[in-house]
Length: 211
Image (spheres, one colour):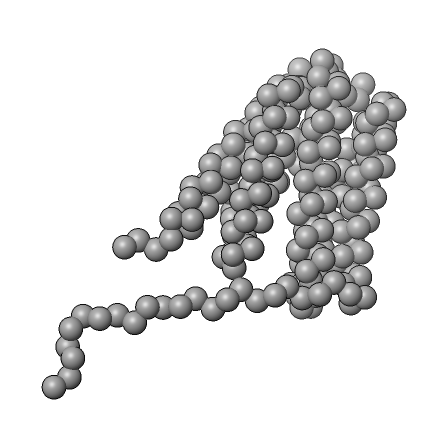
């Protein structure tokens, strides 16, 4: 007589695949674009430090931010996603955004950036990076969500507005300064919200499937 009891065969998740090795093929077009963005980041920080090149800094930051979309698009379209790219791309993103906020903090009297903003941005990035690293090491998918993408876009717009506000052409325009402050606080609010979304998602994944 067949066994009709409600026994379920446990589902065994496949072990996580080992990442592809980093070799000469990793130095492809998307990764070279990412490396160029890292170089642009340090040029940007130098311009902010020496002061006086605010419009040039804003343009440079905008170009660097645009390459973030470009390298990802090329990698996905042409199947050029590599282990090096998965490591390098988010690292460079965090260097350029967090670095820009840190350097603008030195100009806190006129840039609109304050220490609370910097703490929120850097704290969120450190937390999500650590959580993603832990979960993906165990074979779970912790890829970016829309809240993370919107966060990045708002941070970039806010940094550009902050850089422009230091230029003589904009620093006395009250409406522009108000718009800059709104953008900065909106970016911080979305950054915080995005961090909470990732924290809740990570908590759910760490809990495992409901009994």
